[in-house]
Structure formats: C-alpha cells, structure tokens
Length: 231
Ligand code: AR6
Image (cartoon, rainbow, N blue to C red; front, top):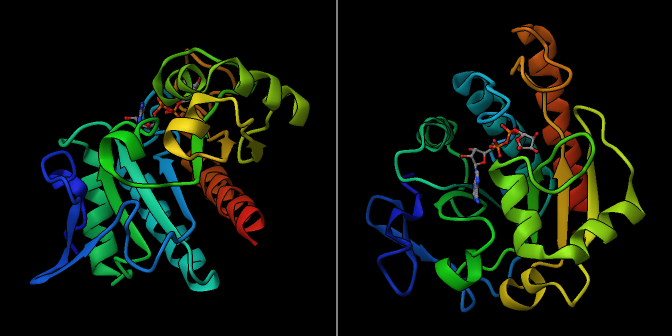
C-alpha cells in the first residue's frame, strides 16, 4: 500500500501505485466506472490540534469498519502537502491492517479541486466545520465555503443552525455552485470534531479519553451520513 497520489499532480492519468507492481487508475475514466467516493480531510488535526498518532489510529479503524460494511464505495483521505504527517501515519497503518487500496487511499491536493486538478471525481466531500457552520476561520472550512460560493451557506442554513462535537450534517449542493459544476460535488458533509486548541470553543484540555470518543463519533457520523446519501 503506497497509495498516495503523490504522483497525481505529475501524471496526467493519475496512476496510483497500490502495491508493489500493481496499479489502479482513478479519475473520470476510473476503474469500475464512477464509484461513489467520499473525500475527507483529517478532522481536528490542524486548527483543533488533536494528536496525529491517535487521530490516524481512529481514521484507519473507522475506515476499516465502514469499508467492510459498505459495498461499492470509496474513501479518500486528502491533505494539502506531500509532507503531511497525518497522511504518512494513516498510509502506514492502513497498509499494516491490509485495507483494500481500491476502497481506501490517500490523495495530496486541495479538496476543492479534486476533479479539475487531480482527475479524481468525489461526489461527496467532508468539511472540518466549526460549531456555527459558518464560512471563514481558515483551514479546510474556509476553502470549501469559498470554493462553493454563497449557495453553500444558504443551503447549510436550511439543514442546521449549529453542530455539536462528534456530529455531521449533509448538505446537498445547489447546482449553481461552482463546486457542483466544476468538480461534480453533489454533497458537502460538515463534521465537527473534538477541539484541543484553548483558543477555540469547547476545548477538551488534552482529555484524550473524551477526545478519542468524540473523534470516533465524528467519523461514525460522517461515514453513516455518506452511506445514507449513496444508498
Ligand atoms: N484541502 C485539503 N485539506 C485541507 C485543506 C484543503 N483546502 N485545508 C486544510 N486541509 P483544519 P480542524 C487539511 O484546521 O483541525 C477551521 O477554521 C489540514 O492540513 O481545517 O478540524 C474551522 O472553522 C488538516 O489535515 O480543521 C474550525 O473552527 C485538515 O484539513 C477549525 O478550523 C483539517 O484541518 C477546525 O479545525
């Protein structure tokens, strides 16, 4: 398992090495047709300062659980940089657990440009949201709201006013949104993870018993919400 599309930006076909000697391509002319795919960032590990090792363990545990339960879907963990520590940790743990690289892989790139810049079609993307479900604030939240335009903010308001840690809410993207037209994204799932940053609301003050429980709930809620969309 050396799935990362480190090569994605370099190779037009986005060929991704999945194990020694074998490759799989993804993208619009992807293998197995257009398998419903969820792209998600690592929840809580940047602005919310959650421990990367613990988060990686939980990501792999939850992906393993749900990729067993759900047939014919894919999960992609996305981060911006090739040097991403969370991507490296997750790749190593996923390989150790023998997760099927056709159902789960990692991708280096901006989650708002997966199809246009990475040739990877993900109809559903997850957002590491804030409790007010508001644009801005930096990180992936600011990027997704900016790329989606005002349509996402109003569509979000129709679905929920706020989010509690560990929960997720799916928002269908209006077809007027550039994320819909350019990237083929039909839904954004907002997820609120546990916060370890004293500068942000609901800081858990390094209580990792609570923190890990809430992060598990957040991924369970995200993957169940994804399942309900593709069902
Ligand atoms: N594409 C892909 N991954 C990204 C992108 C992007 N455009 N931008 C950031 N990441 P963070 P959190 C990765 O801080 O820790 C917000 O301001 C990033 O490298 O966005 O859950 C909200 O308003 C990291 O791996 O989310 C909340 O208040 C991951 O996305 C708060 O931050 C999550 O980083 C949430 O903090």
